[in-house]
Amino acid sequence: MVVISAFNEADIAEAYRIFKTSRPNPWTYSTFEKSALNDFSLVAKENNNIVGYVLLSSVLDESTIEDITVDTQHRNKGIARKLMEASFDLAGKMQQQSIFLEVRFSNNAAINLYRSVGFELIGERKNYYDTAVAIDSTTQATQKNAPAAPRENAYVMKKVL
Image 1 (tube, rainbow, N blue to C red):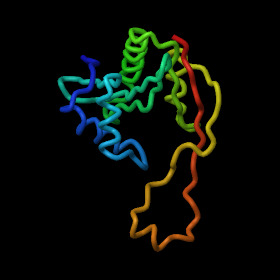
Image 2: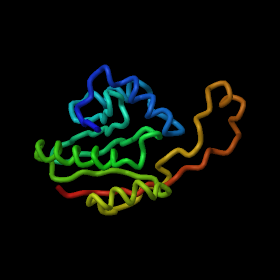
Image 3: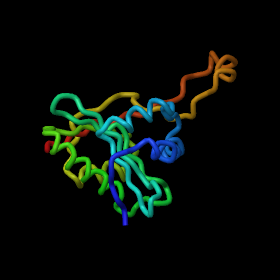
């Protein structure tokens, strides 16, 4: 059974491992930690093991899903949907009016999930996502004239609560 709860410090390292393995250019550990411990973000656990999380932020009466990720071994089990629903409940308790998120154009599974829980497409962000692995500083110095890595556009989606 999956249990959704607020993040605590003991959850950060394992959640960050999931985060790092799911994107080409992850945030730093400290940036992730700050987002996770902001009193809005949630973690999903199964048998006391972290299987996913959602990072939320809030400004005035609007929330933003900064990131939602489920461990690859636990995908397609409804965990992301449970995290989304728990996020809606939390935002409602905080008297939020809406929730926003960005999603890669190519992430059809996520787009379908977001639409199924009430998100609507409201815009696009050009060249929003990195698509290539970051180059370390020594390699970067030797490739100054190399073309920039391609970037991917994002859809902006909104759910009214």
